[in-house]
Amino acid sequence: MYGIPTEDADYAAWLGGASVDVTDRSQWWDTFHTTVSDAVARGVVVRRARVVSEPVSDYIRYEHACTQRNIEAGEDVRWLPRSQALDLLLPGNDYWIFDGQLVRFGLFAGDGSFVAHALEDAPHVVKQCSDAFQAVWDRATPHAAYEI
Image 1 (cartoon, rainbow, N blue to C red):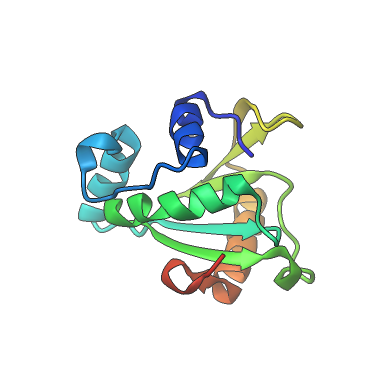
Image 2 (image 1 turned 90 degrees about the vertical axis):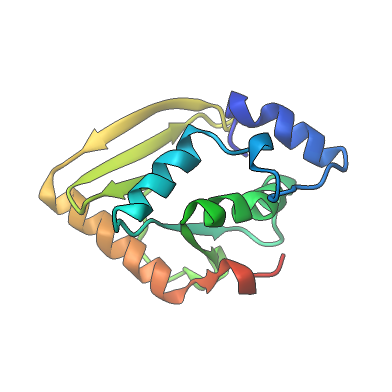
């Protein structure tokens, strides 16, 4: 689980039985969703792949329940169980690749709390991360078909 303070209340409510309602954007749409939506409107393709352990944790079930928000913003999201990634070489941290030129790694502590972002633009690192992402993407299941 990620310890992201902006998610804490939403996650706690979900654990308490609240459902995720994507029809009322005023309840969840934020600057991240606007950024994604604006980028997609400019023709940028935004893809997210989640590599998950199964059976999934409560937090991953929460992420799955909330993923429709990302899709509403314009992301394409896929899921890959770790058991199907045994032969893939993956970076040790979550990351985003921007324009095939910059990687932003998310660094988290052992308890899941956010520590920092690390930026890397060395071409060999960008290529390694891009290749790893593509390998996951090719094997992963689209969100609508991934059942938890």
